[in-house]
Image 1 (cartoon, rainbow, N blue to C red):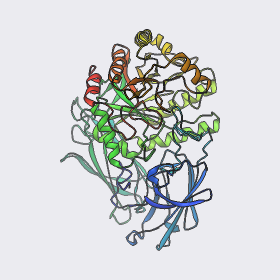
Image 2: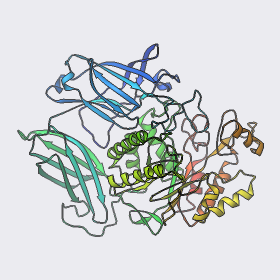
Image 3: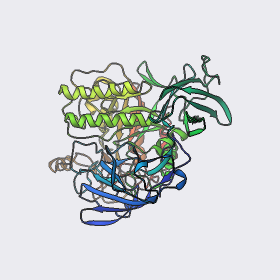
Image 4: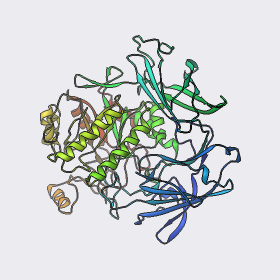
Length: 603
């Protein structure tokens, strides 16, 4: 069961998990469920692909008596999609959006005896206007679509705080000045003025120890961490940067004193990394050095837990195995990942291109809700040094007429400038894949590398990767939307490969013929390779041939001087999509050293 503290970048010592056994009702059925796993997963104890939109969770709990006199907060990591929460029969609040956290102050509703909580969830399975990502609305998974996930899918917990407490904490590093700006906000009930104490350490070395009087709820402090003194300017410094090769993190402890009697009221532990990402001369730079992106497309699905990792160790293992294969990051796909994953990406040194679950049918209302949830994502994840890109849209999902529709183009631009306005330290992609508008990266997708026997297509793929003007020849749609054009941005192949691996002698060794492809199109399926019953990939290869095919694709990418990186599809097999480098249970399919040697042909 998931019992680790859910917010590793904002840690309080005193808390109580509400994960575990809850009563669960859907349709006419009543049973128990293991939170935080969705009912469609085996780890929930149910494992049923329900068709109901509405489900209900209930359980009892006892608040520790030592929490009396404090404000008791009920926190949810994420609930898909809409929910209302009741404590002892009283509605304490509601939330819309399946990717982001929320909390309620439930103090006045407590009896200080046995308490009762009820969570009513509405997750419309077939509503294409809500952010759903890879969750499929039909009865069986197909193509690139997976089992849906209804309801609670991240941790639920209680936390006591005093009236004077920290509400949020954001770190903005500046490696050129050698400083970090620390923005922090106190809760609305804080007694002002109050004193805040801050300690910053690098390992066992104290970098900064100071305190300040706060007369407002919002405050900031800039610390010169490289000179190890506050507010004393800066100098050129080349060490202690955060990177995948050297993920140095500074530990932070902040204590807030009560504004009335001066006693300690709240203590939070966090961390930050000194990291910079920027664009220069059409290339991506990390910490002022050119840095080639070697990414994996990561769906964040597990065979037993679906969108929820079975254990915290599973996040670590995915990152460890990715790095063992020579990748330096991932492009999270159609999912805002659990903060525990981001913590381990920070800790272990793994770049993250963050994304949101897409919606499908554009309306102004759907667009507004999507933008609101994106704002919550950026607010939640602002301080993670591993995140270097916000990918706002994917392959025109949700904006299908963006190529020529001015309203949908403006929506894409609006998302781009919204993200830039909220966070000036990261790069932003308006529409990853094709039909881009304003964007910091020319991020395009191509699976037209050809089957093993199609040597003519091999050469077309290799040649087209060498010129921006020819990229569209190996894409499904044009690179930029009408009225937008390439303006010298770094070029990254952000989806490629996707080779479905067949076991040698499994009976599907022949290449996919034009007749096969035509039949798939006629049946409403994508014109791609299939091997085995229901297995799917963009092309296919026998397991004994895979490394040669992988090397062929990577060599073509490395032969292009315009590319600043690539993202291979994908990290793991997911249900019928068998194009992962790892199996459905996240185990190696191939010797990781062999893949690493191919990847390390370019530094």
